[in-house]
Every structure is written in structure tokens, then in C-alpha cells.
Image 1: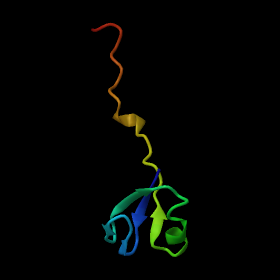
Image 2: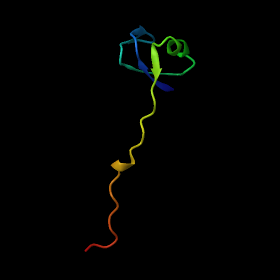
Image 3: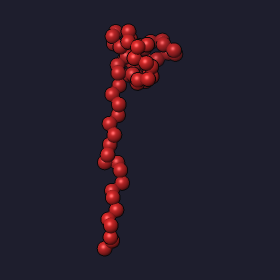
Length: 60
């Protein structure tokens, strides 16, 4: 399943407003992507800087 951003209001398995997120298989919504109703969302990049800093081996 792929995440899509809703660009225009439409009715699918439920009512989707502009800006909503829809999860569906690409083959099911290909016609909506081609017409500009949905846009494929890129996966969020993993931020490695969020990890905790390594502790020093010896204190002092």
C-alpha cells in the first residue's frame, strides 16, 4: 500500500477532502493519479541526527 496526498476532493471508499492522506494500492488509484486528483507521497527521510550522542568510554 502506498500513501497519496489528495489534491482535489473526491469520493473513494469514503469522502476525501483536499489535503487528506489516502492509502491505497497504486493499481487501484492509477486513474486518479493520472487526472491529478492524487499525488504520490515520498517516504519521510530518516533523520539520523535524532539519535542520542554516544557516551564517552571514560569519564573525566
